[in-house]
Amino acid sequence: MKPSRFDYLRPDSVDEALRMLAEDPDESKILAGGQSLIPVLNFRMASPERLIDINRLIDLAYLRSVDGYLQIGALTRHATLEKSRLIERRWPLLKEAVHWVAHAAIRNRGTIGGSVSHADSAAELPVALTALNATIVARSSSRGERCISAQDFFVGTMTTALEPDELLVEVRVPPLPAGHGFAFEEISRRNGDFGLAGSAVVLTVEQGRCSDARISLLGAAQTPLRVPRAEERLTGSVIDDAAVEAAVQLACEASEPTGDLHGSAEYRRSLIGVVVRRAINKAVERAKEGRDATPRHDH
Image (cartoon, rainbow, N blue to C red; front, side, top):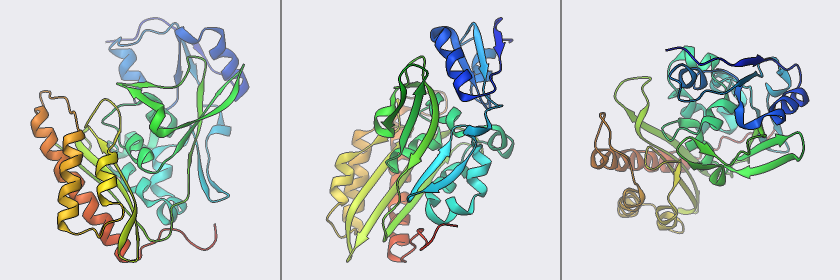
């Protein structure tokens, strides 16, 4: 298949891109890495009249720590996250999640902004960002910037809270507390395939008890799914086998996976139990080991 006819636009600045988008927001698509959009265009699942290529906007390609917060420009490639020492030391959950994204060629080209905007419920980054309490920064030419929590950003199947004239420009991730543990677990049919089920977990352990728990699921709903009841079951508790199994059960009950040719809904729900159990146990081990990813100084 080939895409339908469109006008190709290539802005040289973010402001120019926003002006182009505002001219006809409902008939425009943003092209970054193209790893999600190009197949959609080729299968004519979308037929925009205008394609706005933002690859010249180097101002959106950055990865930095500011006042303890991680700032990721929308044009930052997956491979940049994967290879970053800053990410490895301070937000290693992102490194683990990105490692599961497709294959190296895709990670070299695909962008953070593209993955988050595409909002596939089987994508790794949205799940990790939800567990990390990240914030999505959007910008329009008429209203300026606004910040949207990752929890509120993903609203349905490949649907986000972005307005038609808004461009995702940045992802911000808050610092993680001392004593935290983390894990990202996924099950797929083959290496590089879309995940059948996955889980991102961040736990904080203080004096032997869990003081904070975040559990986000992949493939369990139409969006990345946080499971508050499972998180509440762990918070305030000593995380023993009984607590883990109770949280796993609550996560499975909250899940509403959709069956397809790769697996029934019940099969996927059983896999969710497997990945949640693995992720919680690994996060607890890391917290007990005192593996705090936060250094004393930024470098």
